Image 1 (cartoon, one colour):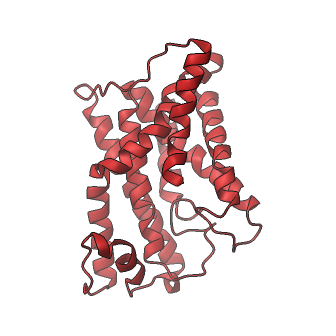
Image 2 (image 1 turned 90 degrees about the horizontal axis):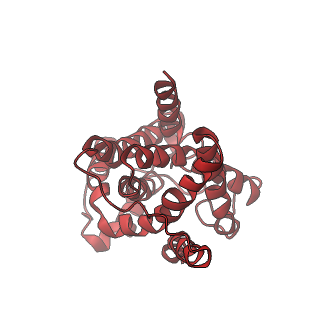
Length: 250
């Protein structure tokens, strides 16, 4: 269901183009040669910031760290993940670093992300940028992207339903998360004039964003973390956005 949801923006883009006879390009040309630095940023920087957000969360709540590795083995054991690895703080950090390195190269995940990027950053964002200034367009795009996740959050995806104010606080948090992520995704899209870096970035955060929860005990409040969909877990991404906006304003 979640995989199919990722292709809704692609289908919406296609049918909207047919109905309105809009022949705007989908921005799928890679433009790699002139933008290889943007590709490096997309591939590794946001996922590294998610890693640091998870570290911050577990520094604040050290008793929330599960050193048994049970969830990691349950989730990835069938893909060859070592079952008898001694799960210590050191080994979990190393696993996180490996995750950062391999996450941009998991092609199926990037392809699913491409479905969303074609619609949100490839189609809607350029339209909004013609109607308003760039900052407002990116902000509105992020809000709308977050609202599009509302039905899934209402059904318990990402956060479950066992937290304060569920599911409405989860919907509000997801809107905030999507605004922050949209700034990163819009930045690499605009700089490269391509949605391919955004698809790589999106796929990377989809992979590495799941990992903090796999080393956390059960029953914690997902609105706080440890993943990037919680306020502490996304602290690295948020600080990065603030620095990015300050740097761009100079």
